[in-house]
Amino acid sequence: MVGVVLALRNLPAEQPRPDARLDVVGLLLLAPGVVGIIYGLSRVAGAGGFSTAQVLTPLIAGVALVAAFAGWALRREGRALIDVRLFRHRPLSSGSLLGFFAGFTLYGAMLLLPLYFQQVRGESALGTGLLLIPQGVGTLMSRGVAGRYTDLIGPRTVALVGFLVVIVATIPFAFVTPHTDYVWLMAALLVRGLGMGVVIIPLTGASFIGLAHHEVPDASIITRVMQQVGGSMGTAVLAVVLQHAAASSHNPDEVSAGFRDAFWWAIAFTAAAVPLCLILPEQVNRNARP
Image (cartoon, rainbow, N blue to C red):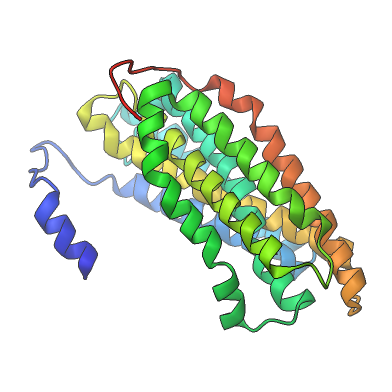
C-alpha cells in the first residue's frame, strides 16, 4: 500500500504512445521462457543435479522459448515486447552481464547462510532471520553512499570495490565450525551487506548511461531479468556443491565442512566477477561531491 501511494504521488503520469500495441507473441514466448529457466534451476537441488528430466525439461524448454523470442524481437525492429537490439549498447550489455554474475555470486551465496544457521547451529527459522538482519542493514546503509560515489568516480571503480568487499566478508564463512562466534559472523554479515549494496547501484546505473528516455523501460526489464536468472543459477550451482560436499551426514562437524567447501565456491565465483568490472563504463562527474 505504501508503494502504491508513493507511485501515485511521485511517478510522472505519462500517456502511452498512440502506435503502441501489446506484443502478444513476444509475451507468450518470453514470459514462460524465463519462468521455465528459473523453475528448472530451482529444481536442481531437489532433483539431485542438472542431469535429471525434472531439471532439463523446463530448462531446455525455457531456453528455446527465450531464443525464439530473441529471433522474433529482432524481426519486429523495436516493436517487440522488449527491444533486444539494446544489447548493442555497451553500457547496457556490460551492466547486464555483470548483473547476471552479481545475481549468481551474491544471491547464490544467500542460500548457504540461512542453511548454515539452521542445519549446523540448530537455529529456528525466526532465529535465522534475526541473525541475518545485519546483512540487510549493511545493504541499506551503503545504497546512498554507493550512488554518490558512482556519480563521483564512475561505476567501474565502485563496482570493483563492492565485489572485493563481498569477497573479504564472505571469507570468514569459509572457516565456519559448529562453534564459530556469532558476533564474528554477524560483523561479517554487516560488511557483506555493505558490499552488496555497493555492487548493485553502479551496475544498475551504468546500464542506463546514454540511453534515450523511451529505451529505459526495456533496459530496466533486461537488467532485472539477467539478475533474476543469475541468482537462480547461482543458487542451483551452490545447492549442488553443498549437497555433494555435505553428503547425507548428520554430524555437525562434517556438515559444517560441507558448508566451508560451498562458501569457497561462492568466493571463487565472486572473484571471477571482479575482472569483468573493467568492462563497465567509467564516467567521472568532477563537479560531484561525496
